[in-house]
Amino acid sequence: MMTHTLNLHWSEELIQFLEKETGLSFSTLTVQKLAGDASSRLYWRISAIRPSHSKKNWVLLETEPFLEPKDQFPYINIQTHLLQYQVHVPHIYAVAPSLGVLLVEDFGDNSLEKVTQKLSPKQYGKYYFLALD
Image (cartoon, one colour):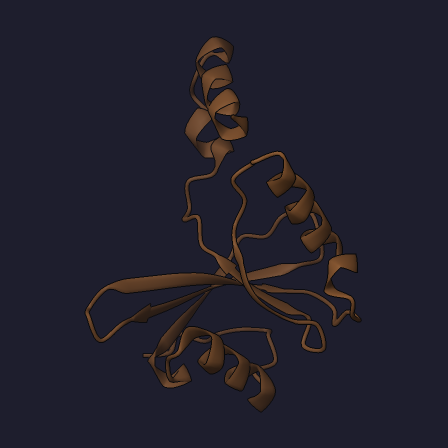
């Protein structure tokens, strides 16, 4: 079931991290590389069909290993700051600083940019307001 054609080094430690955090065997997970942002981070969609036949997705954010405390990592700093202003950001399920990975909520493929791309400024302004409200 795996579709791993990755650059990510699948160490035993990383596999154990994913199994622990998802509650599923690594052999039942599929991995898909996602388009990145302007940073050096890489993103992978981790998917599983659970025993209840419901599909569950996570995003694995890959970066350079970082040191504790976790709150010094820029992604976590920005996420914490935005949460203080009640901006809906992906929930962080788990962090493994020594591996340089975070397991976060998957918001899907529809970015705000994609949704508003063909709208007039007046129309897309509504979406930006909703995203921040």
